[in-house]
Length: 108
Image (cartoon, rainbow, N blue to C red; front, top):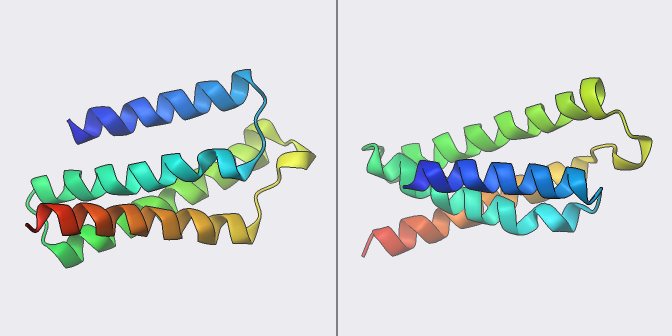
């Protein structure tokens, strides 16, 4: 179920931002938090312990940021939407916070 949620988040965020030409990074904040939560649920359900869940979520977040940069560099190439370093840090932080919430709720 978490995987379906992740795929849905990806499709919704990409279609919405492209169709509405959204370039504000705040638009993506809830998506990063929610995807961090869903990744935590997914990795825990696959049998990862809490430390591995954090590691896998962080690794997935880094891979996502690489994807965003490559998409901008080779596909989108909009000057007004150039990825910023602080945006990457904020995105990874939100991913981590979502995962920590999942870990705390599922630990009970």
